Amino acid sequence: MYGLWGFERLKLKMMVVMLLILVLSLFEQNMSFSSPLNSEGLALLRFKQRVVSDPFSALSNWKEIDGEIDPCSWFGVECSDEKVVILNLKDLCLVGNLGPEFGKLENLKSIILRNNSFSGSIPQEIGELKELELLDLGFNNFSGPFPSDFGNNLSLTTLLLDNNEFLGNLAPEIYEVKMLSEFQVDENRLTDAATIPSCKTSGFP
Image (cartoon, rainbow, N blue to C red; front, side, top):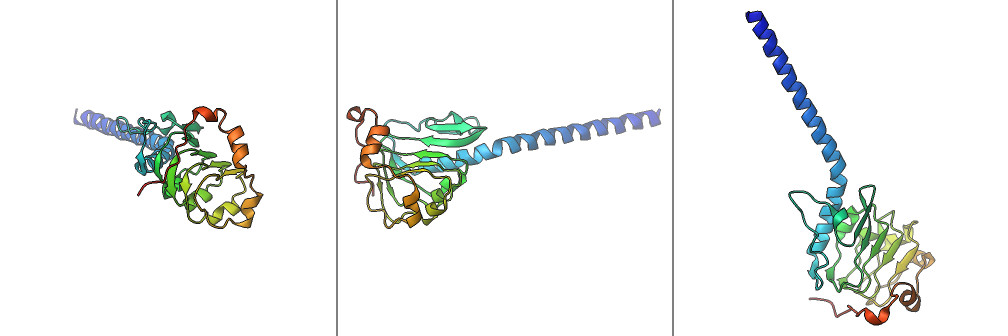
């Protein structure tokens, strides 16, 4: 009788161990699946913290819900294969600045912040985004030196910097990038310019 009871206890222990292994395996798979997205979501939330004025509440759904961060459901954010690839926040009159958190968004192909009131310098980390193809920062208040790494970015094809403050000297390589003029930008990007107010201000303290 004791031997049978001992066997049953051993079998129960083995089942508990196997169940724990299964639970840990599922947990690791879930972490592996969600970590990149959570990392990008956290980077975007840090960017949101730098926005000091959001007059249209465009970023109101940028938040953690029930402990989950899903940037792919946020306004202005587009994803592909569960990765953030486009940030399009044009014509929103957002006031703030940009920070190094953009370096965490390594899958970004397009950053469109046209017609806002962002100021300060353009972070060096944006120039290190190897997948970036389009950067539109026109009609803002950016100033200071332009990141030198943009000259080494082989994927960048379109760079829009019109109507900003002094950006310093651009590296010679930058001139090989397709830089549209103010008039081309108005024609291609602002299809109904008469109805879109200018958000460009003097910045913020």
